[in-house]
Image (cartoon, rainbow, N blue to C red):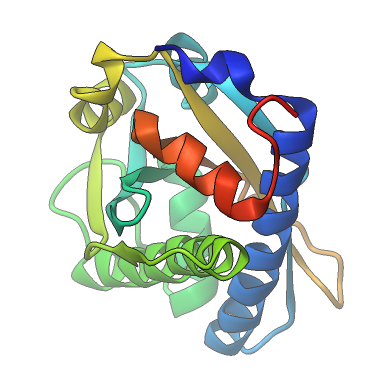
Length: 213
């Protein structure tokens, strides 16, 4: 069954609203970490093919920083947050004040890895909490796993079972700015949300959105 055939603009509007609320929570947490007010928005939510996922990640051989978590509970699935290495390093510079940290090649800075893991915890946890609150579903994240590797290798790991039933994922764009100065962190990442096939129906039924709406 290709469940993406039944996803409409109404469904995407609902997911965008959930994403914006989750972004608001994440921005509050990031503001505390950075000691400066951060605006975080979700400008777009859409359905993409696996090939398009790779294009958004810069190509399947492009090295990226990834936070992956497994969603357990009433609507299981997988979630990725992917960033180009230079954008991840730029954000860690803002967070730690250490502009020598890079993710270009190992060995990587332990402080840099820890900072990026915390950012991944905040971002993925905020979105998942928003989704759980909207749906009243029990959704529990696994401990987020940070990895630095080729985008194709990272994404393929989470798609092995799903790709047997579908070729699509939901992508949630995110953008970050300093709320006071308007400074763009250059930190525009992509969440890839991949509910297990049966979870789509569970999520939209919980939201009261008709499956064929």
